[in-house]
Length: 425
Image 1 (cartoon, rainbow, N blue to C red):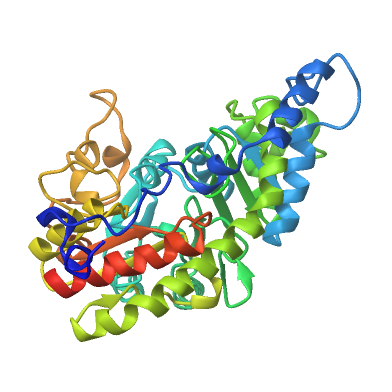
Image 2: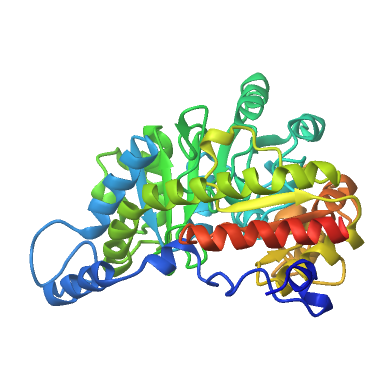
Protein backbone atom coordinates (compact mmCIF):
# COMPACT_ATOMS: atom_id res chain seq x y z
CA UNK A 1 0.00 0.00 0.00
CA UNK A 2 1.39 3.39 -0.94
CA UNK A 3 1.51 6.28 1.53
CA UNK A 4 -0.98 8.13 -0.69
CA UNK A 5 -3.51 5.28 -0.68
CA UNK A 6 -3.00 4.77 3.05
CA UNK A 7 -3.90 8.38 3.80
CA UNK A 8 -6.87 8.55 1.42
CA UNK A 9 -10.22 7.90 3.09
CA UNK A 10 -11.95 4.67 2.17
CA UNK A 11 -15.04 6.67 1.20
CA UNK A 12 -12.83 8.41 -1.38
CA UNK A 13 -11.40 5.19 -2.80
CA UNK A 14 -8.55 4.55 -0.38
CA UNK A 15 -7.88 1.20 1.24
CA UNK A 16 -9.75 0.64 4.55
CA UNK A 17 -7.54 1.11 7.58
CA UNK A 18 -8.73 -2.17 9.05
CA UNK A 19 -8.56 -5.41 7.17
CA UNK A 20 -11.70 -6.70 8.91
CA UNK A 21 -14.61 -5.29 10.88
CA UNK A 22 -15.10 -6.20 14.54
CA UNK A 23 -17.52 -8.99 15.35
CA UNK A 24 -21.14 -7.85 15.59
CA UNK A 25 -21.57 -9.99 18.71
CA UNK A 26 -21.30 -8.52 22.19
CA UNK A 27 -18.38 -9.78 24.32
CA UNK A 28 -20.27 -12.52 26.14
CA UNK A 29 -21.71 -13.87 22.91
CA UNK A 30 -18.27 -14.01 21.33
CA UNK A 31 -16.92 -15.93 24.33
CA UNK A 32 -19.41 -18.81 24.15
CA UNK A 33 -17.63 -22.13 23.73
CA UNK A 34 -17.56 -25.69 25.05
CA UNK A 35 -17.97 -24.61 28.68
CA UNK A 36 -21.41 -23.09 28.07
CA UNK A 37 -22.32 -26.09 25.91
CA UNK A 38 -21.31 -28.52 28.65
CA UNK A 39 -23.23 -26.51 31.27
CA UNK A 40 -26.43 -26.81 29.23
CA UNK A 41 -25.86 -30.52 28.61
CA UNK A 42 -25.37 -31.10 32.33
CA UNK A 43 -28.78 -29.51 33.03
CA UNK A 44 -30.47 -31.56 30.30
CA UNK A 45 -28.89 -34.80 31.46
CA UNK A 46 -29.97 -34.11 35.03
CA UNK A 47 -33.52 -33.57 33.70
CA UNK A 48 -33.80 -30.52 35.95
CA UNK A 49 -35.02 -27.62 33.84
CA UNK A 50 -37.00 -25.94 36.64
CA UNK A 51 -35.13 -24.61 39.63
CA UNK A 52 -37.52 -26.00 42.26
CA UNK A 53 -37.89 -29.58 41.04
CA UNK A 54 -36.38 -32.13 38.68
CA UNK A 55 -35.51 -35.75 38.03
CA UNK A 56 -32.33 -35.61 40.11
CA UNK A 57 -31.57 -33.87 43.36
CA UNK A 58 -28.79 -31.41 44.01
CA UNK A 59 -28.57 -27.66 44.11
CA UNK A 60 -30.36 -25.52 41.56
CA UNK A 61 -28.16 -23.73 38.99
CA UNK A 62 -30.29 -20.61 39.55
CA UNK A 63 -29.51 -20.74 43.29
CA UNK A 64 -25.80 -21.01 42.51
CA UNK A 65 -25.96 -18.22 39.96
CA UNK A 66 -27.73 -15.89 42.40
CA UNK A 67 -25.11 -16.47 45.11
CA UNK A 68 -22.21 -16.00 42.71
CA UNK A 69 -23.73 -12.86 41.18
CA UNK A 70 -24.43 -11.30 44.59
CA UNK A 71 -20.84 -11.97 45.60
CA UNK A 72 -19.53 -10.49 42.35
CA UNK A 73 -21.52 -7.28 42.81
CA UNK A 74 -20.97 -7.03 46.55
CA UNK A 75 -24.64 -7.25 47.50
CA UNK A 76 -26.30 -9.41 50.13
CA UNK A 77 -28.94 -10.77 47.75
CA UNK A 78 -29.43 -11.47 44.05
CA UNK A 79 -32.58 -12.63 42.30
CA UNK A 80 -32.43 -14.34 38.88
CA UNK A 81 -35.26 -13.34 36.55
CA UNK A 82 -36.29 -13.70 32.92
CA UNK A 83 -35.09 -10.36 31.52
CA UNK A 84 -33.64 -6.98 32.36
CA UNK A 85 -37.15 -5.52 32.18
CA UNK A 86 -38.37 -8.16 34.63
CA UNK A 87 -35.51 -7.13 36.90
CA UNK A 88 -36.57 -3.47 36.73
CA UNK A 89 -40.23 -4.28 37.41
CA UNK A 90 -39.32 -6.57 40.32
CA UNK A 91 -36.88 -3.98 41.66
CA UNK A 92 -39.49 -1.22 41.47
CA UNK A 93 -41.94 -3.45 43.34
CA UNK A 94 -39.16 -4.12 45.82
CA UNK A 95 -38.77 -0.44 46.69
CA UNK A 96 -42.51 0.15 46.76
CA UNK A 97 -43.19 2.21 43.63
CA UNK A 98 -46.89 2.28 42.78
CA UNK A 99 -49.70 4.21 41.09
CA UNK A 100 -48.91 7.91 40.69
CA UNK A 101 -45.37 7.70 42.09
CA UNK A 102 -42.86 9.63 40.01
CA UNK A 103 -39.50 8.12 39.06
CA UNK A 104 -36.82 10.34 37.49
CA UNK A 105 -34.85 8.68 34.70
CA UNK A 106 -32.57 9.84 31.88
CA UNK A 107 -33.46 10.96 28.38
CA UNK A 108 -30.97 8.42 27.04
CA UNK A 109 -31.79 4.82 27.98
CA UNK A 110 -33.58 1.86 26.44
CA UNK A 111 -37.32 2.57 26.62
CA UNK A 112 -37.84 -0.36 29.01
CA UNK A 113 -36.48 1.83 31.81
CA UNK A 114 -39.56 4.02 31.37
CA UNK A 115 -42.06 1.26 30.59
CA UNK A 116 -41.03 -0.69 33.68
CA UNK A 117 -42.08 2.33 35.73
CA UNK A 118 -45.39 2.39 33.85
CA UNK A 119 -45.86 -1.34 34.46
CA UNK A 120 -46.10 -0.75 38.22
CA UNK A 121 -48.36 2.30 37.77
CA UNK A 122 -45.61 4.87 38.24
CA UNK A 123 -44.91 7.99 36.20
CA UNK A 124 -41.58 8.32 34.34
CA UNK A 125 -40.13 11.83 34.65
CA UNK A 126 -37.52 12.39 31.94
CA UNK A 127 -34.39 14.35 32.88
CA UNK A 128 -31.44 15.59 30.87
CA UNK A 129 -28.15 13.76 30.47
CA UNK A 130 -24.73 15.40 30.47
CA UNK A 131 -21.46 14.57 28.73
CA UNK A 132 -21.22 11.36 30.75
CA UNK A 133 -24.21 10.11 28.68
CA UNK A 134 -25.99 9.54 32.00
CA UNK A 135 -28.30 11.51 34.29
CA UNK A 136 -27.40 15.14 34.90
CA UNK A 137 -27.70 15.52 38.70
CA UNK A 138 -28.56 19.22 38.37
CA UNK A 139 -31.56 18.44 36.20
CA UNK A 140 -32.57 15.61 38.53
CA UNK A 141 -32.77 18.18 41.30
CA UNK A 142 -34.91 20.45 39.10
CA UNK A 143 -37.30 17.61 38.25
CA UNK A 144 -38.06 16.59 41.85
CA UNK A 145 -41.69 17.21 42.85
CA UNK A 146 -43.72 16.36 45.97
CA UNK A 147 -44.68 13.14 44.14
CA UNK A 148 -41.15 11.94 43.36
CA UNK A 149 -40.39 8.62 45.03
CA UNK A 150 -37.25 7.37 43.28
CA UNK A 151 -34.34 8.19 40.97
CA UNK A 152 -33.26 5.68 38.31
CA UNK A 153 -29.67 6.31 37.18
CA UNK A 154 -28.87 4.26 34.08
CA UNK A 155 -25.26 3.20 33.57
CA UNK A 156 -25.08 3.56 29.80
CA UNK A 157 -22.60 2.14 27.34
CA UNK A 158 -20.54 0.44 30.01
CA UNK A 159 -19.86 3.44 32.24
CA UNK A 160 -21.32 4.74 35.46
CA UNK A 161 -23.70 7.55 36.31
CA UNK A 162 -22.56 10.22 38.79
CA UNK A 163 -23.56 8.09 41.76
CA UNK A 164 -22.03 10.31 44.44
CA UNK A 165 -24.18 13.28 43.44
CA UNK A 166 -27.28 11.15 42.81
CA UNK A 167 -27.06 9.37 46.16
CA UNK A 168 -26.57 12.69 47.94
CA UNK A 169 -29.67 14.16 46.26
CA UNK A 170 -31.68 11.05 47.08
CA UNK A 171 -30.64 11.13 50.73
CA UNK A 172 -31.44 14.80 51.06
CA UNK A 173 -34.93 14.38 49.59
CA UNK A 174 -35.73 10.98 51.11
CA UNK A 175 -35.86 9.19 47.74
CA UNK A 176 -35.12 5.62 46.72
CA UNK A 177 -32.44 4.83 44.12
CA UNK A 178 -32.85 2.03 41.59
CA UNK A 179 -29.77 1.44 39.44
CA UNK A 180 -30.36 0.28 35.86
CA UNK A 181 -27.15 -1.66 35.24
CA UNK A 182 -28.23 -3.34 31.99
CA UNK A 183 -25.21 -1.99 30.10
CA UNK A 184 -22.85 -1.61 33.04
CA UNK A 185 -22.18 -5.14 34.30
CA UNK A 186 -18.63 -5.33 35.66
CA UNK A 187 -18.14 -1.57 36.00
CA UNK A 188 -17.69 0.21 39.32
CA UNK A 189 -17.73 3.66 40.90
CA UNK A 190 -15.19 4.70 43.51
CA UNK A 191 -14.38 1.08 44.25
CA UNK A 192 -17.98 -0.15 44.52
CA UNK A 193 -19.55 -2.26 41.82
CA UNK A 194 -22.54 -0.87 39.98
CA UNK A 195 -25.72 -2.39 41.38
CA UNK A 196 -24.47 -2.25 44.98
CA UNK A 197 -24.90 1.45 45.77
CA UNK A 198 -28.61 2.17 45.35
CA UNK A 199 -31.48 0.51 47.17
CA UNK A 200 -31.66 -2.01 44.34
CA UNK A 201 -29.72 -2.81 41.17
CA UNK A 202 -31.16 -4.31 37.98
CA UNK A 203 -29.12 -6.13 35.32
CA UNK A 204 -29.84 -7.47 31.86
CA UNK A 205 -28.29 -10.65 30.50
CA UNK A 206 -29.79 -10.31 27.03
CA UNK A 207 -27.59 -11.35 24.12
CA UNK A 208 -26.22 -7.86 23.36
CA UNK A 209 -24.97 -7.29 26.92
CA UNK A 210 -21.43 -7.67 28.31
CA UNK A 211 -22.19 -11.19 29.52
CA UNK A 212 -25.28 -13.07 28.44
CA UNK A 213 -27.69 -15.91 29.03
CA UNK A 214 -29.52 -15.11 25.78
CA UNK A 215 -32.34 -13.54 27.76
CA UNK A 216 -32.35 -13.02 31.49
CA UNK A 217 -31.82 -10.53 34.27
CA UNK A 218 -30.72 -10.13 37.86
CA UNK A 219 -31.90 -8.02 40.80
CA UNK A 220 -29.36 -7.12 43.50
CA UNK A 221 -29.88 -5.54 46.90
CA UNK A 222 -28.54 -5.60 50.43
CA UNK A 223 -31.91 -4.58 51.89
CA UNK A 224 -33.72 -7.64 53.26
CA UNK A 225 -37.17 -6.10 52.88
CA UNK A 226 -36.53 -5.00 49.29
CA UNK A 227 -35.31 -8.50 48.46
CA UNK A 228 -38.36 -10.13 50.07
CA UNK A 229 -40.75 -7.89 48.15
CA UNK A 230 -38.93 -8.47 44.85
CA UNK A 231 -38.82 -12.20 45.57
CA UNK A 232 -42.56 -12.33 46.22
CA UNK A 233 -43.28 -10.43 43.04
CA UNK A 234 -41.03 -12.54 40.79
CA UNK A 235 -42.76 -15.78 41.86
CA UNK A 236 -46.49 -16.15 42.41
CA UNK A 237 -45.86 -18.90 44.98
CA UNK A 238 -42.90 -17.22 46.66
CA UNK A 239 -44.67 -16.78 49.99
CA UNK A 240 -44.40 -20.56 50.46
CA UNK A 241 -40.61 -20.17 50.44
CA UNK A 242 -40.27 -17.17 52.74
CA UNK A 243 -40.46 -17.18 56.48
CA UNK A 244 -42.80 -14.22 56.79
CA UNK A 245 -46.14 -13.69 58.55
CA UNK A 246 -49.27 -14.30 56.50
CA UNK A 247 -50.28 -10.66 56.85
CA UNK A 248 -47.15 -9.61 54.91
CA UNK A 249 -47.78 -11.93 51.93
CA UNK A 250 -48.21 -10.17 48.57
CA UNK A 251 -49.33 -11.55 45.22
CA UNK A 252 -46.74 -11.99 42.50
CA UNK A 253 -46.12 -12.84 38.86
CA UNK A 254 -43.83 -15.45 37.28
CA UNK A 255 -40.45 -14.00 36.30
CA UNK A 256 -38.32 -16.94 37.50
CA UNK A 257 -35.14 -17.81 35.63
CA UNK A 258 -34.93 -21.39 34.34
CA UNK A 259 -32.00 -23.71 34.93
CA UNK A 260 -30.41 -23.66 31.46
CA UNK A 261 -29.88 -19.89 31.28
CA UNK A 262 -28.68 -19.94 34.89
CA UNK A 263 -26.11 -22.61 33.99
CA UNK A 264 -24.89 -20.49 31.07
CA UNK A 265 -24.83 -17.44 33.35
CA UNK A 266 -22.54 -19.15 35.83
CA UNK A 267 -19.98 -19.78 33.09
CA UNK A 268 -20.34 -16.28 31.67
CA UNK A 269 -19.99 -14.67 35.10
CA UNK A 270 -16.62 -16.36 35.38
CA UNK A 271 -15.60 -14.62 32.16
CA UNK A 272 -16.74 -11.13 33.20
CA UNK A 273 -13.57 -9.85 34.84
CA UNK A 274 -11.40 -11.03 31.98
CA UNK A 275 -13.69 -9.36 29.43
CA UNK A 276 -13.61 -6.06 31.30
CA UNK A 277 -9.84 -6.13 31.82
CA UNK A 278 -9.27 -6.86 28.13
CA UNK A 279 -11.61 -4.04 27.08
CA UNK A 280 -9.89 -1.61 29.44
CA UNK A 281 -6.47 -2.45 28.02
CA UNK A 282 -7.63 -1.94 24.44
CA UNK A 283 -9.50 1.27 25.19
CA UNK A 284 -6.42 2.68 26.90
CA UNK A 285 -4.37 1.90 23.79
CA UNK A 286 -6.97 3.52 21.53
CA UNK A 287 -7.12 6.68 23.65
CA UNK A 288 -3.34 6.95 23.77
CA UNK A 289 -3.21 6.66 19.99
CA UNK A 290 -5.95 9.13 19.02
CA UNK A 291 -5.98 11.72 21.83
CA UNK A 292 -3.42 14.03 20.26
CA UNK A 293 -5.24 14.18 16.92
CA UNK A 294 -8.58 14.61 18.70
CA UNK A 295 -7.23 17.54 20.72
CA UNK A 296 -5.84 19.21 17.61
CA UNK A 297 -9.24 18.94 15.94
CA UNK A 298 -11.30 20.10 18.92
CA UNK A 299 -12.79 16.64 19.46
CA UNK A 300 -13.59 15.82 23.08
CA UNK A 301 -14.22 12.53 24.79
CA UNK A 302 -17.07 11.30 26.96
CA UNK A 303 -16.76 12.39 30.59
CA UNK A 304 -16.38 9.17 32.58
CA UNK A 305 -17.17 9.92 36.28
CA UNK A 306 -14.66 7.27 37.41
CA UNK A 307 -12.33 6.21 34.57
CA UNK A 308 -10.81 3.39 36.63
CA UNK A 309 -14.25 1.80 37.01
CA UNK A 310 -15.25 1.99 33.33
CA UNK A 311 -16.05 -1.38 31.77
CA UNK A 312 -14.53 0.21 28.64
CA UNK A 313 -16.76 -1.47 26.07
CA UNK A 314 -17.28 1.79 24.16
CA UNK A 315 -15.34 4.93 23.29
CA UNK A 316 -17.44 8.05 22.72
CA UNK A 317 -16.25 11.28 21.10
CA UNK A 318 -18.06 14.59 20.60
CA UNK A 319 -17.58 16.69 17.49
CA UNK A 320 -18.77 20.19 16.68
CA UNK A 321 -22.06 19.51 14.86
CA UNK A 322 -24.52 16.66 14.19
CA UNK A 323 -23.71 16.80 10.48
CA UNK A 324 -20.00 16.40 11.21
CA UNK A 325 -20.73 13.50 13.58
CA UNK A 326 -22.63 11.68 10.85
CA UNK A 327 -19.85 12.28 8.34
CA UNK A 328 -17.20 10.99 10.75
CA UNK A 329 -19.22 7.89 11.66
CA UNK A 330 -19.90 7.12 7.98
CA UNK A 331 -16.22 7.44 7.14
CA UNK A 332 -15.17 5.26 10.07
CA UNK A 333 -17.52 2.48 8.99
CA UNK A 334 -15.97 2.61 5.54
CA UNK A 335 -12.60 2.07 7.25
CA UNK A 336 -14.06 -1.13 8.80
CA UNK A 337 -14.31 0.58 12.18
CA UNK A 338 -17.68 0.02 13.81
CA UNK A 339 -19.04 3.46 14.77
CA UNK A 340 -22.34 5.28 15.05
CA UNK A 341 -24.09 8.47 16.12
CA UNK A 342 -26.42 8.16 19.11
CA UNK A 343 -29.24 10.37 17.84
CA UNK A 344 -30.55 11.14 14.39
CA UNK A 345 -34.08 12.59 14.26
CA UNK A 346 -35.06 10.61 11.18
CA UNK A 347 -33.86 7.25 12.51
CA UNK A 348 -36.00 5.59 15.15
CA UNK A 349 -33.94 4.46 18.12
CA UNK A 350 -35.76 3.81 21.37
CA UNK A 351 -32.63 4.43 23.38
CA UNK A 352 -33.53 8.12 22.91
CA UNK A 353 -36.61 9.52 24.69
CA UNK A 354 -37.71 11.50 21.59
CA UNK A 355 -38.56 8.15 19.95
CA UNK A 356 -40.57 6.79 22.89
CA UNK A 357 -43.83 7.28 20.97
CA UNK A 358 -46.22 5.42 23.33
CA UNK A 359 -44.70 7.15 26.37
CA UNK A 360 -44.67 10.67 24.95
CA UNK A 361 -48.25 10.14 23.72
CA UNK A 362 -49.27 8.77 27.15
CA UNK A 363 -50.93 5.76 25.57
CA UNK A 364 -52.73 3.26 27.81
CA UNK A 365 -53.88 -0.31 27.25
CA UNK A 366 -57.48 0.51 28.14
CA UNK A 367 -59.62 3.62 27.91
CA UNK A 368 -60.43 3.59 31.60
CA UNK A 369 -57.06 2.98 33.22
CA UNK A 370 -53.40 3.78 33.03
CA UNK A 371 -50.62 5.42 35.01
CA UNK A 372 -51.20 8.97 33.79
CA UNK A 373 -54.78 8.82 35.06
CA UNK A 374 -53.36 7.95 38.46
CA UNK A 375 -50.84 10.81 38.39
CA UNK A 376 -51.23 13.45 41.07
CA UNK A 377 -50.51 16.28 38.61
CA UNK A 378 -50.46 16.86 34.88
CA UNK A 379 -47.24 15.51 33.41
CA UNK A 380 -46.44 16.77 29.92
CA UNK A 381 -43.96 15.30 27.46
CA UNK A 382 -42.71 16.49 24.09
CA UNK A 383 -40.00 15.30 21.68
CA UNK A 384 -38.03 18.51 22.25
CA UNK A 385 -38.27 18.62 26.05
CA UNK A 386 -34.61 17.65 26.59
CA UNK A 387 -32.79 19.68 23.97
CA UNK A 388 -29.42 19.51 25.68
CA UNK A 389 -29.57 15.71 25.64
CA UNK A 390 -30.49 15.63 21.96
CA UNK A 391 -27.59 17.95 21.13
CA UNK A 392 -25.09 15.82 23.05
CA UNK A 393 -26.34 12.61 21.48
CA UNK A 394 -26.48 14.06 17.96
CA UNK A 395 -22.83 15.23 18.16
CA UNK A 396 -21.56 11.93 19.52
CA UNK A 397 -19.53 9.37 17.62
CA UNK A 398 -19.36 6.06 19.47
CA UNK A 399 -16.95 3.22 18.73
CA UNK A 400 -17.39 -0.27 20.10
CA UNK A 401 -14.31 -1.51 21.95
CA UNK A 402 -13.99 -5.20 21.16
CA UNK A 403 -12.04 -6.89 23.99
CA UNK A 404 -10.93 -9.57 21.55
CA UNK A 405 -9.11 -7.15 19.21
CA UNK A 406 -5.51 -8.07 18.48
CA UNK A 407 -2.75 -5.49 18.82
CA UNK A 408 -2.79 -5.19 15.03
CA UNK A 409 -6.53 -4.52 15.11
CA UNK A 410 -5.96 -1.76 17.66
CA UNK A 411 -3.16 -0.19 15.62
CA UNK A 412 -5.27 -0.27 12.46
CA UNK A 413 -8.18 1.30 14.35
CA UNK A 414 -5.92 4.12 15.58
CA UNK A 415 -4.71 4.69 12.01
CA UNK A 416 -8.28 4.80 10.72
CA UNK A 417 -9.61 7.12 13.41
CA UNK A 418 -6.72 9.57 13.07
CA UNK A 419 -7.06 9.52 9.28
CA UNK A 420 -10.79 10.31 9.49
CA UNK A 421 -10.42 12.99 12.16
CA UNK A 422 -7.62 14.67 10.21
CA UNK A 423 -9.83 14.83 7.14
CA UNK A 424 -13.29 15.53 8.56
CA UNK A 425 -13.20 16.79 12.16
